[in-house]
Image 1: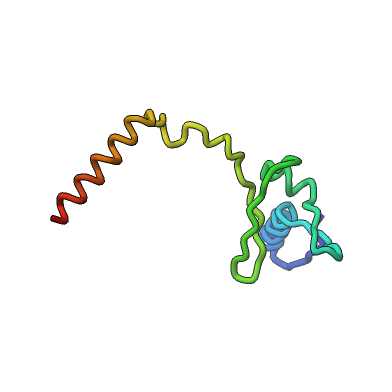
Image 2: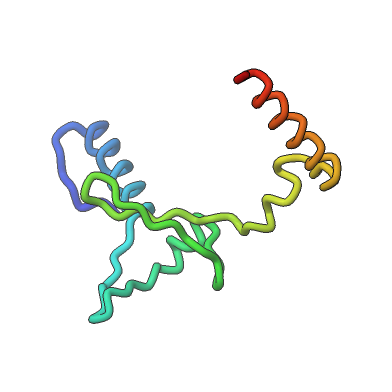
Length: 104
């Protein structure tokens, strides 16, 4: 319910809609004596934070931003399949040899 009165009904409707959407995206939390806050359940659900999840805390323009971090193991396979160790060592030795011969 919007308790705002403006003579222009269309403008009043638009502003009330914006206020409603803003209220859906905001929440208030109290800071404890230890500097801790509890993230409201609506905020946690909105970005998928579950108990035990890690979050990233950033300070941007004098504001604190909390972002959900994905599980490290969700990244499995992100870089593709690993090379066998022996092949990786051989490639590293060949690259080192190539660099040393170019300097000479």
